[in-house]
Length: 529
Image (cartoon, rainbow, N blue to C red):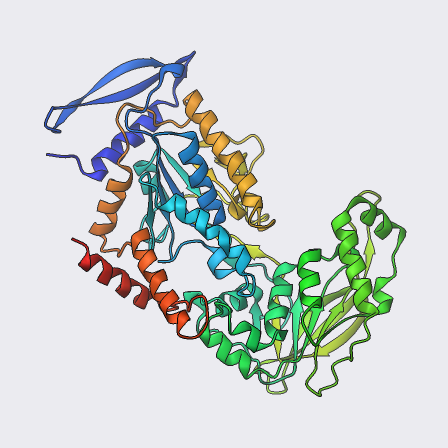
């Protein structure tokens, strides 16, 4: 009788434990014997192998959890570095590509071209996509570690940092991530219903690229957005929006603004939009000048803001013109409620000044002076946060998995040992920073660690018996009645989206209902011989 995935997984787990016992340059590893017909011999055969001579007869079995840029770059590099490796990519959504699909703004189609590269990886005969599979619910981390030689966690950051101020939970206050997912058609946020009607002003707390994305979507004409892949439900509500003024609030000054010159230049180029900066906020301290000397990017952003301050475009006065106002040196102290206490009515801001020692980042310190800004919508763009899962060490202070060059550590304590065969990449590894391309460099480092551990015997599973890998995972998920979405299934979903979009003059119309996606995948499966 052929072994089940559980029997295979248990043997791999035993092998991983045994191969951690090193005696000089030798590793003791189990070797299973099989009959010619594939039947199992119940006894174990043991042999002593030198570390340099370790071979994996079936090829490295790798599971990547998360199908965003970090996950796909990792899969691509593993396939290149290991000629016989097999990579399975898991994602909790039926759709792949992570933040490229749900995070990149709809008016940035050029950024999404990277999905073509990822698709070439996914269609490799050594790569499989397991969509609609949730780590921690459908399959545990420990089960994956028993099924694969290597598990790489690349599921990113799907939660948000908190302001920690009164009124943060009022109706009308949302994380920028939620708003971005809403207009991008993410299944988790299709029912968000941001208030675009009660006021002509929205406040965005934060001044990074995500904050600019939110402001741009609120202020760009819907005629322009209608030719993008923005979700239809968002386009309908934006067409009826009363918002004509967006206030971008930053704790520090223009030199420390987190946005890039490219993003700032784009929003300044929106036809009919007045971009304003208060002249008093542009004054520079000696410390600011030193920061600009050390960073060309900060200097370019500052110069663009100076240009905006000198703009002669009319300021929003309620007549229908649109305005983006940068407000610096302000820290949110409270979200103000309406008279009935039911929803947001404004934001109370504390004025700040910058302090800091020489050659160290300046920090914002409150002055005790306050001002208020009335609004009907508040978007918090103060940072994403990763979510811990059972069985995984997590650094709650930094919001990431403690690691050394991608190797997951057993604890947050300095000098902690590694967890054999477990790696991390992307935002979960370094925190929510950087652009899509940053993940390429990040994946390089993690895959290099995998190569080093493979070469040295540090993976702890290099026996002559392969772990179950894809077959074991598929068997497990089928036992649990999980509807797996393959990459072929995804291509059919994508074809349906393109067809829907062509009817509206859009590149695609994203299907936002998970059940509808699964239905399309099931229809495809039933037609396959």
